[in-house]
Image (cartoon, rainbow, N blue to C red; front, side, top):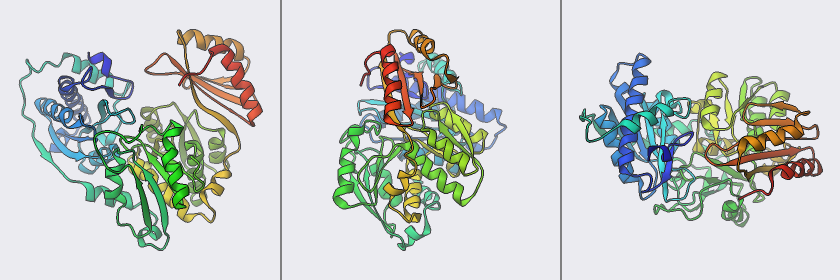
Length: 463
């Protein structure tokens, strides 16, 4: 059963089958054993090195899973600091604020409410994923037997860190917005996820912010699917931006670690274009430094970084790889096409609320409307990510390579091909028999020509 719930970057499955309280205890016990060992190996001997932060989202199954997880952690001898119902970036903050050995957030992110899971982080909120500790947690969880374990009685305390979290985040917000000298009207769609809890606590009562809330009531379910990559999920927010003539809108996923932008015209913005705006503004203010982007991003991102004197760093897809690249290169910012944005001033982690602050700052400092600012980065046209179901992933990749092998290729994550006027990346899914394709071109004709050639090999897209 353990094998069914461990994924590439976290633990995630349908509740109560296959994910249940028994497995939650095993994950807690295994996570504690691993995190305590890592803290010890780092030379940490202080009491906080035996403390683990635990948070949870608003799903109906989260309290029971949290309780079982906490018991597993305590039975392994670790002290638990329960920070309550919080967004995932809150846990990253709490780990660093308290200097704890690590933390676990009970959440299934953007998955429907019948799912749940655990996101595990180590010292300094470093991600625990495949290749960075999750394999060992899985091994330890598989052999953890509650009937045979002698509980070591780790302590438990609850802490309310919302005031500290708010103060930490608002240090990055433009003072003119805080004072009310610059005023913004912002639509926020939380889909009844954790954004509806976080936004009032962090962004409430700021003089220059008028928040128009959508889906802020938490019921344990979602008002609509909390996945910002499905374009129709943004319809409510787009309509609200137009209705209220807002400066812009944002949409948070279920645990509010992802944030998508809607411009002043009600148009949803690709996260690579938003990242290009972030980078361009940052490099205008201070030349130089590294910026990390995932390999699916528009070519314009790399071009903007180089043109402004920065160092472009291409990364594999996934928060484990993005965070590693951010730290390795001491990068200021990182951006992923999926809506994860990473900030050096947020411990090198991804944060939905910090992304909202960055967008507020961009809009407040601009002399043009957001749609006009973003238009400068729309140099190319893309398909977005398209999925193909294949029986044999390796065979399908080999068939593509046979056709395009004369093109310039890179193999950082799957294979990227440069055809001249169009370019594309194709990579396999970590969890399903799917190939994920992103095609971009200098114009629609070049993009479509490349896409049609690939479809001849892979067949009809799914989903």
